[in-house]
Length: 417
Image (cartoon, rainbow, N blue to C red; front, side, top):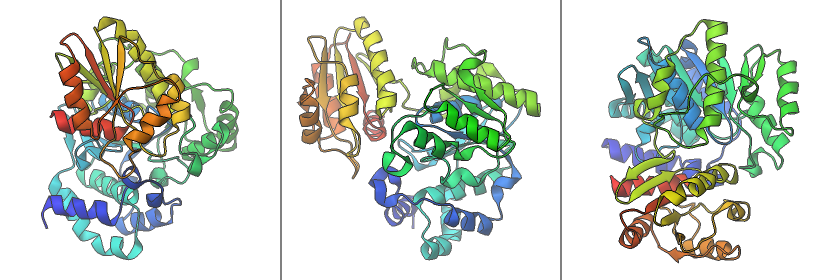
């Protein structure tokens, strides 16, 4: 089979949570531990930093990888989901920039462990996690930044014993798996905190702080809340320009301070300014078109979309008109999201759409739900058609914003490439 056929088989035989939702979710570490044993525990051959949280994981992971990749280091970077190319999940970042895992390495891994995968039935995320650890070990990375998938305690990545654990923030998402309260979700995310391993928490929330303090005390860990430390990083000139990056930078600053103080691991903070370029991160308040400006952001839950719409309100006066293309997946809490959205008026308009995934919320259903909150707009059956309509309606001085879901942004990037 060709590379494309093997990737297609991987997605069809072992569907990802991002693609099909709950039927791909597989809690517990048994399968991952068995796969890791078969591979010879590759993660033990390099040092790691573990990142969990509701939002900001990808940005924090990329900031850290960029900063740590100075001085000749090779930094593994494992994130999810990807937007266009499967290989975006597994990268090595160096002074020259990033390299995705080669197609040949993906094919070799899938061929070598096909028997195990067929007999044991690991999840898609367990397979990609095992592939990342195996590749990083073979490539001889100095350190790897590992982003959790869903949760923390039972996440496939949670077999590692890192130098540092980072939890960006806590919001109400994936409640069917992680709990219905912030405290319950914080407990699941705090599962990545290991005995004696320092931990950084990126926000202070009176509901979740006691959870982190209790677990850190039980496990004998140094615990740092980033907002209580001095942020030594500037948000000026970032190629990841979202306003929400200020909180992520404070988290990164606290993490780098611990790495330097406890382990003598230095960093080149100047590289953070071009983290998106150095690590290949996309979809975070990213400009993907001009005349008119086209900006996309993968914020997809109430916690993240609150920040996205706040920034839209800030930039809207700079444009003649703002055209918002918005699509979500079917399990999103539209009732929680709608109150955060900007009401349409003579300056703001919406085009509702649905991304090309099995999980997409049908566009008419999305329009109906939002209409109940006074948010009306046109509809388009695909993201490509929504973009085509917006471009026909937009003047050169307007803004087209695309968001609501990773998949909406993925379709947009593929359409505009």
